[in-house]
Amino acid sequence: MAQHAPPARGARLGRAAGANGPESMVSGVVLLLPGASRIAPGPMRPLARALGRAGGAEGLVAHAVLHGPGDREAAARWAADEALRRYGDVPVCLAGYGAGGRAALRAAGHAAVNSVVALAPCLPDEVRGGSPEPVKQLAGRQVLIVHGTNDARSDPECSFLLAARAKKANRSTCRFEVHSDGHGLREHRAEVVALAVDFVLGAMVSGRYSRPVTDALAAPPPLGLRMPLASGFGRSLRG
Image (cartoon, helix red, strand yellow):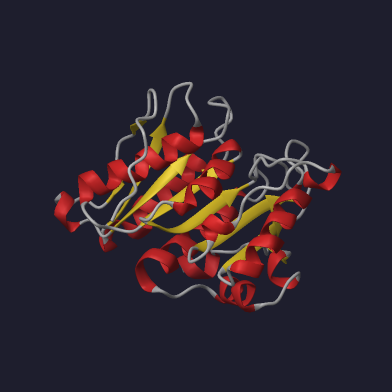
């Protein structure tokens, strides 16, 4: 049974990428929550295209969540409700970047959500005494967090602390570090996109992950929460 979020001012779903058949053939929906800047959208556009190519044949659809000045978290919950209205009782993945990553983590308690991808999430600074983010809503979800070690906008240690707390309540949590990369995850964008696609397909379609993701999910903290993203990840998967 879906939770019904209040209308989010100005929120709407962008054009679908992925399954080309009728709506009744859609097996899952990925909702892409952008960061704060439209000028620097980070990896979300290539991620949408990659999900459409890799998951379309399996009935996977990706939508960007476009919203007005309202609450990003409310927009994410509204979008999950809208996905259910359009496509029926299908699983939903919330995938966000920057401020959208935080919204994805926070809105994960929606009943339809089975997985969350947070790329360089902008979180309160727990390192310097900021209030910690909630994690109870992540229980029962597959959770992937990816952060560049040189992120000057959002301290990667904050996402590590969140992941460590989440892991205690939810073993299906992993976190990858992109060494030498910044907030935009530009230096290793192909690898970041390939990792996110592998995770989403595993969580929503096949139930199987690549070896690095499987190892990260199985490893105890802190190993599975500081997993290095290898240069070239995804090449063997594409080959």
